[in-house]
Length: 106
Image 1 (spheres, helix red, strand yellow):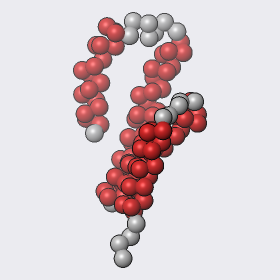
Image 2 (image 1 turned 30 degrees about the vertical axis):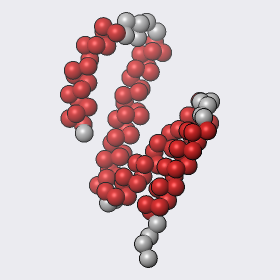
Image 3 (image 1 turned 180 degrees about the horizontal axis):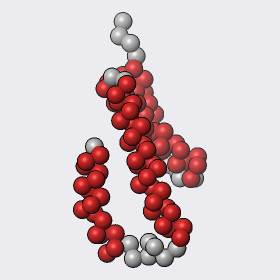
Image 4 (image 1 turned 90 degrees about the vertical axis):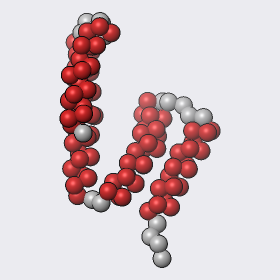
């Protein structure tokens, strides 16, 4: 996974200077440009990789399915995003599917 991100970063780096001409105009932009790849992406995938080594793949994929509703609900409550009825219905369906997947078979 790291190799893919590394190759992608090297290949996409020149486009930064073509498309993001105002990225380095303000110090805040520079900090944001450094923060996003290092903290949420690098640390997120690092912790995910550590977790994959310690739990079975089936449990990891079930947890990965919960990531979508959690991120969506965080966007609603922290950022103020608005969702439609169908969006909430989709969240409920995903959570119900996760519950069904995690139930023990008798």
